[in-house]
Length: 273
Image (cartoon, rainbow, N blue to C red; front, side):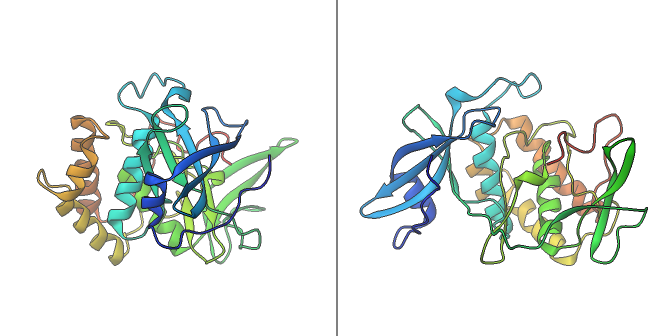
């Protein structure tokens, strides 16, 4: 399979191109647990690369019996867009060569971007890093898993707490060449029970930044029963999931702090990367 082409949209918005364009499948990500197809989307002379995840290629999850992975991916994008942080690449639900599915703009990772995760010796993370916890590194040895003390990651930690992300792995973080950070793979989100499982625990218990509190206030308003975000999410989530989403936003506003891991639930996904 050839490398994705990088021809950015010129006139249409990214969402418009993803929605209106013709999808051509170019390859498949074989390592993925569900069907992930690499595609080109083209419309009226404009072309870009994207990922297409058809609902027909999803493996059923016992603890996510309602809705689809594709629907939750689109819902995560809607919430990300509502924050103004735009951490999730443009994502739409649409029909494709293998039926309805999620189509998301391809983001090229910057190989020269500074590391966001690391393993360090000792018990302290060091300047510019936040500790996640000990990790096995082989031969009975452990090291300290750390993530960068980066405002983009901190925003993502807030977004993950809002959408109740059950699978925030290191491989889901994509630093782009323009300095922005994108996050992908949001199929296991919005559960009514606390399922937050992430590598971004470094701020657990710390006060939320003022900008995060402002964003949460905007989300709360947009999630009112007649709010614009509620209208956008209603076709994608169940009523119980919407109620739980509002409760998480309100709880974060009330505590004013990054959440701690929930007891009885593995706090870090496996594998972590």
